[in-house]
Image 1 (cartoon, rainbow, N blue to C red):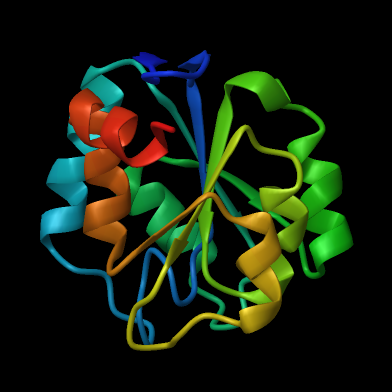
Image 2: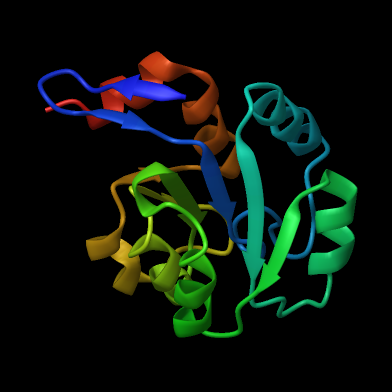
Length: 153
């Protein structure tokens, strides 16, 4: 999808990279409504990828349930290496933790979710947008005007 940012550049995003723990799931729980949002994004032809350190051991199960591509990255450096397979200029990353810095550094748009597990303050220099939930983050890719308004100069 192409976002025409007022007083700035146009940005095309075709890949959304998601973190798992603290982002897609909170305290190990996946909200039911996320499956519908994920499906809307797929209908809009986004490539959806999960890159996880898998601290709770449920990444494979969640990836299968949501039909997401899964890659493991146990450190920020490993996540950064996984990101090399995507076009940085067309990729967005969503996360909340210090381990996600590697994904944020290799994405055109980086979004932090401030949910119940919190965010690590070390990620702040690497993110473009902070939202209160994963639902809010995903909705930005569905509602073009929300993304464009947030990124406008």
